[in-house]
Each structure stands twice: as structure tokens, then as C-alpha cells.
Length: 110
Image 1 (cartoon, rainbow, N blue to C red):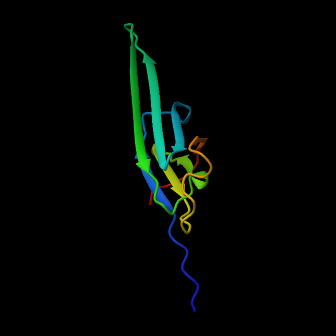
Image 2 (image 1 turned 120 degrees about the vertical axis):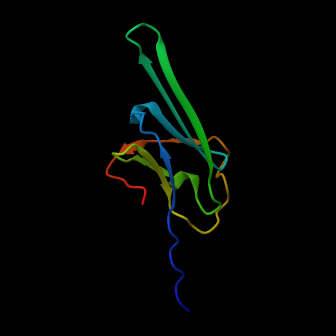
Image 3 (image 1 turned 45 degrees about the vertical axis):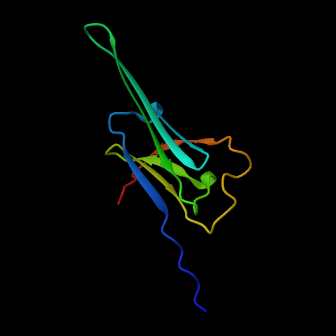
């Protein structure tokens, strides 16, 4: 019988062009990827402008949270990817979650 085809990796892109990599946080917890960003800017005339966002994306059942990785494209797209695998015991041991480093690289969202 023919071997099953490997599945396409799971991929989500989030436009974060106004945030630097160090202003972004990507975490997995309870079957979700949570992306958040915080940017503060001191204004010349005084005061601070602050931008914040949080986006939660549900992971498909076929994605193990420990395999999720994130990279930032030169165009300011945060690309979150993970291989799809056969179903696994969801959420691993406990639901403590983990933080994922954001890498800057020549990643594309194609």
C-alpha cells in the first residue's frame, strides 16, 4: 500500500509591521497560540503613545504545541508554523504553556 503523504505544515501569518521582534511575545497554552505586542513611543510634545494587541489562534488537533515556531519576515509579517502530525494527546502534561522565540529571517507567508 502507498505511504501516506506528509501533510502540509500548519501556517498562520499576523501583520505586525509596526512592532519590533523584542516587542512581540508568542506563547502556546491550552490549545491556542497567543500573539501579543506592546510598543510605547515618547512624543516630542510630551506624553506617551502606546500600542498593544493580543491575538489568539486555535491550534488544529494535528499540531503539537511544542513544535510551534515563529519567524518575522522583512515585510513585518509574523509567521507561525508547525508540522501537522497524527493526533496526539492534546495539551501535553498540564496546561502551563510555553513561550516561543521570534526569529528574524527571510521568511515568507506564501
